[in-house]
Length: 193
Image (tube, rainbow, N blue to C red; front, side, top):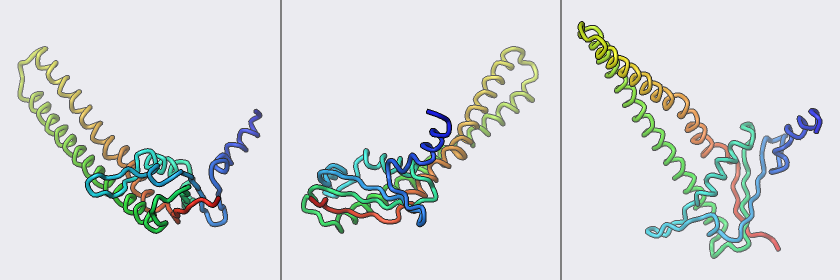
């Protein structure tokens, strides 16, 4: 394949998997299933359908595949609605997206608490290292080994805290923002035969 052909295919690869309305910046995606039980697991306590993990992961992959400037129209078709109405399925889906949003927010708060505890621990170990260095005058090799180990601990803990606060939080924020804002329209329907 020549370079120009590759570039051309690369620039339009999304169109192989979903329809792009470039004027309105909308990606139209249609999925087909036999019935709703293929995308929902049933909560045995409340009997409320919950999106299964496969569909949830697929939704997150849509956010990565569809260029950010496009909103998403998602149409999910079934051979059989299994007694659900289209409106009930939409309500269940919206509640599940809201539950996923809440899960992501809670995860973000938990990760921030972990990062802040790492940061606090790192600062505490740094203070101990400084005190050890300045107050322990006659330690020789033992002092150097302990100071070196504490230095490594400080660097590792601080690095992990910064990674959680900066790098990981960007990915979580991307998921949180997309869970609510990327869908333009979601429809459920029975396939026409």
